[in-house]
Image (cartoon, rainbow over the protein chains, first blue to last red):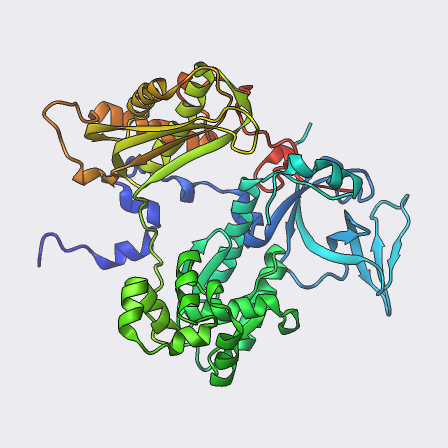
Length: 138
Length: 370
């Protein structure tokens, strides 16, 4: 058997970054990305359709607090019951969508705010679905 | 037609025209998203420019390609919010003809195919010769002289000798492509740049040499970064400076270059010689509006020539450049740069006063939702 022959099964089980390690467990691998958890991996399922927004105002408390970063995915197609970013009357707002028989309701999770009914002929469009929220803890 | 905003500002303000300065970071980001989405629809995608791509759909024949492309269009719109038009053809040139048909006929809903003969004949008859990819103003004049005005007339023109003589090989290839003989393959590998240019128009006119030096240092740094990014070295730099041709002021334009005896990618060396050229070009009393730096004579790092008279980049230099690039990639562009580049509030910085916020490229400028 050739001394340089690599053992196939090792190549299949080790993650990419380990191939750069020359020997031993504590080699110098340049790319550490696979050894650390990242929020991106957890929350950004499809980066080309994921956009970030900043929440303003208290209409969605206690689900979302002002100042938080919202992770919004445009590629999702089911909205009923979900918190979404909606383009309404030329503005982007964040509300929970409830499908009714012949119209939509834009509900604020904060009970102090009224539901906004949206009928077909109105200028409203779902921009994307809020899949996660993120913010600093003071 | 484009026109400078400052000339039409009153009209825009009076009529409520929304005006935005160019936001290149935003465009690049959105373009990347479109390209990533497209890459899910074909194993071979050539990114032709910031807003154009070619997809190879060979092997997808069992699909209805028009339906498939409608799905592509809807997916891009849904994922990114950018509308696209798609043209389908057996060659790149024909695909672009089909694309133009789709763009100019909204009732087609953004997709048109010239795979079928009757559609192809119609499209080639509709398209004017100057709107065909590869045919510029000069060729158009020559074609008109030959009585060729439409794509169809160009495709059917029989005299091969005239075509080759008047329009050279490229003209012949364009004609072949219109005849469904593909001549241009998809280039999916990123080609290394042979020349790298860096320039900006100044936000406010510049009179003094020191400000010009600062701007040139910045452009040289940018160009060198791109150079190192593709593992290349360069042998020549050119520097241009000029006044504003749209303004009624004394005009001045000057360009000169310097050739290194040893290839380099060392920013410090490039800045030093760029300044030497700049100093020789500079004339006092002019209102400078733009400066440009171009590096050429680009070779792969391994192939670089060594000279007896000039020191090539030392290993220490290479290591230093690598570390600087790595830090800038991680912490943000220009985190580390030469002092030659000046500090932040230079008057020559591009005046993007009306730029839209860095919606997708900066955490501090996220779009807000209520």
